[in-house]
Image (cartoon, rainbow, N blue to C red; front, top):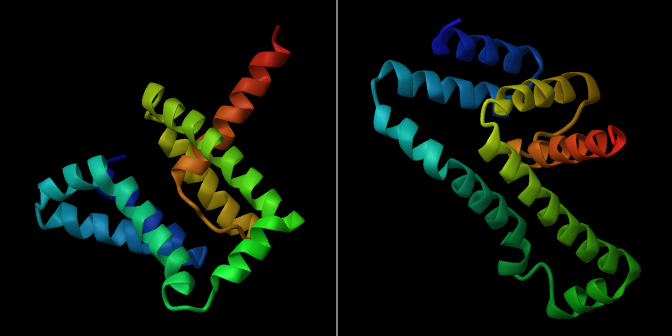
Length: 151
């Protein structure tokens, strides 16, 4: 199946699954492909993850920037049990994401399984796609857990 056919299939899956992110991404890539803007593929491949994380971080920090969250609230939340657990969760997530990034570097083809898994999670589990890096982190965790049991 060609790249364009795969993108059309993802577009249809995104529409059926009511996932605007998947449908929009597939549609944009089809536009890039059919308009021969090949340098855009290179840019997205090299910097797409960073750009996506930048926009995610911007959206998360907007309440801080526009004054909806005060310094006092931040300090209170960091010293409360949920805040301490959030710090621990953030630290653990970044550690796992490092493992996911290493998995993607070792086996870049795994990204297709991650995308299919994300689509299945959206359609059947009503999940929210947070990107292939976190999915790779969970896959790396599963891989290591299975490796431990094989000994």
